[in-house]
Length: 270
Image 1 (cartoon, rainbow, N blue to C red):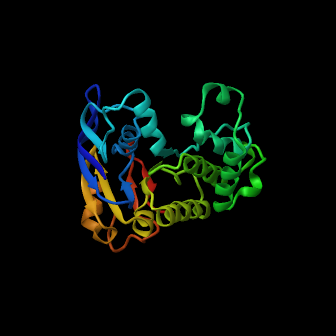
Image 2 (cartoon, rainbow, N blue to C red):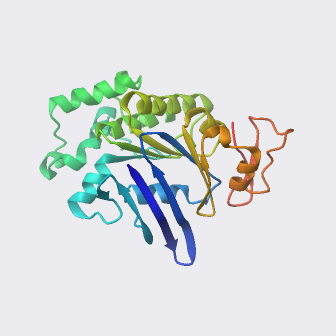
């Protein structure tokens, strides 16, 4: 289904993604964890073709993702939707129009310029918003919504693409715990009910264990763990986050600390 082989991305002398290899043979919910600077976001950007690999390959079925250009690349980006930490909505535009932006890859330039949408697509957008519990906000400006609501609008926009894969880059990093749970519950339902593959970059071990079928741990651009959540032991967590992280018996499950890229301490779970 999805095959990533020896994928590498360098920025000058800095290797952000280093010889990453893994296969996904069926739709799953996969969490990619690791501290800041581990290469998680770069990996997702390459998978969506927002950035190009230095070497290696990505294939999905019979599609050469890394080699795709032009219409083939645009078609791939439609099949592989992206959700961002900062939502990437148009703040002054109403919610339903933001959701309808998920159809831009398959619309004409003229229709896009004049913001023209078929009635069936408008109805579909509102139906998706209803599925995510925010249909009543459809006519509101996006910037009038809370952060958690805006992220659900971003998820609805991704679903308008009818993608086979959803890539979520730190989808709950800027949310409070309650909204984070709502967003993660929504992503899990989408995987289970629609049979879509969901790959999410996550900061917390607890979130990965609770929601994901498989966890990939990255450190310094490399995959250092790949397995089921129950195999994510203390030793495995140390391999991912480094010796400076406290995973001892004395560390509570909700306040495990790890070192971020800058060397400051951050909560691994809230």
